[in-house]
Amino acid sequence: MSCRVAMLRMHDDGLIKLPAARHRYCPANNVQFTSATAPQPGINRPVHALAGVPLKIVMGRQQSRLWNEYIHRYHYLGYKPLPGAQLRYFVICENKIIALLGFGASAWQCAPRDKYIGWTHDQRKKNLHYIVNNARFLILPWVKCKNLASKILSLTSGRLSRDWQDQYGYRPVLLESFVERDRFAGTCYKAANWVLVGQTKGRGKLGPAGKISVPIKDPWLYPLERNFRHALTS
Image (tube, rainbow, N blue to C red; front, side, top):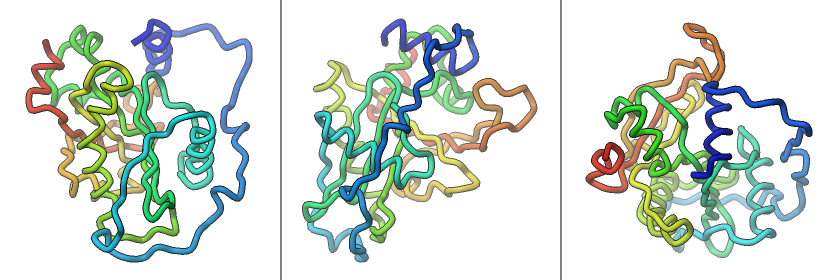
């Protein structure tokens, strides 16, 4: 992890305060909706009836813009750049994009996750990059396929370590995702054998203690290695 990325992450989490940026830049302002992401005819059949759902890594400027456009158009959180090292995927069915995923740097601290791992502050500081955050997961709204979400999560967890090593030269050992509990039940993560480890307090990165200022989220984890705790606490 670069020093710049580490400082930006610590600023976001309220651990340090950086000077205000000289220029405000909102990447979402540059996302223009085009016919490429217009709604398509519905797909409504169980996942086993699909002709495969291969994952395709987003590569190049054109694919990156397309991924950004889909996310900003259909994901409730919209588009913003993923922090640090990242991988983004298209999920393809019959030569059409049906879903998208984005993985980036993990949260600087999360009490339920950190307790589950059992690491110290210094261990977290040293090994945090071995955790990858599933920051975006979108099945396009016209795709209604039972069990598709858990299928996609299983396929992704089966190959992300290899893809990450090809891209960055090391293998992560743990995946995480934060699910807004008032919006989603996390059913697909449970079906894909992710582990629910508690809930956040809704304080946010800079909110006052004891006051709920952001949506409460459920942290879900998926070990990519059996000895993930040893890797994260060594």
